[in-house]
Image (cartoon, rainbow, N blue to C red; front, side, top):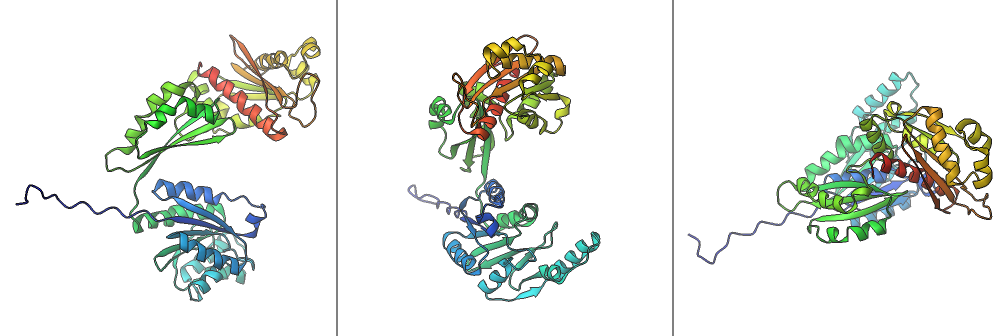
Length: 430
């Protein structure tokens, strides 16, 4: 029988999850000819299983630089995920470098060879020797079958560090990650569960949001952290919770949201990972409304974003891009005297554009844009970056004017985002 002062032994602490480094290989990445979307995908998927990427490195197609990067990565991380350099051409060096790095030779992997042959047979294309060599792999790797391409993935375990090599083609890498890499990492390491809850906001900048929810953020439990992720006219709030040994981590995180809504509910357009235009589509469906756009400075971008949502034909009827004043009058019914007195970039004009779009397109609600995107076009009374936006329904027309002045491309993007924010606010009754 234990003495009154004895205690049961404390449980052994859970081993820390391994550090992960992502290494992308290819001159095209360094030259900016290809944008690295692979790292973003891997980072997101790794976070879901409790792994955090500590560093991302890009390396040229040179054997000595790849070797140096491998040495540096293994000093920092216990898992190194490599993409690129597995194609059939001479500049694809990755598996040759890996074979030398791990002190082995390339050997033919018959199951991969049969898979490659089947792909060429299926597409009725001749198979060259370089295609056959796609089935060569370092003798000491574990082959990860590539269901949608010819280059297999390769898994190495060397002195306690896991190295995984995958193709740089995004859809091939994603399939290998999903089918093989993520399940194997989960099986090999003790991973602490991580939960994410995302709240999407629009209409208020990051610093103003932070000010409004400062007390709520300060009161978050120690195992739940808040990140602000701003983009064009929107801020994604991401709660990340780590396992603290208590049940229902996600449920406890969701229970924090009512207090958040009480502070910034007017700016929240979704409590999931989604886009502003998708949230607008949900509101239009729920209210059984149709929408159209009248666009000048945005050149159809608002319509493009709305129609990018699957199923948008249920509520989107059309758009009139009236860049020239003649079309504003002929297609949207803007009065000549309005253009003369107030100009094309004015709240008076954009209000008539929105009202004209409602009539011409036969929709319940319409939005309109007009502005000076730049870099030229400024007048004595209107600066470059001046944009006017309007919303019209059967009962009201609302207009707003902003001066953005962020350069032509960003002025257009912000104008589109701002008019979509206006549309959402009115549909939501804010």
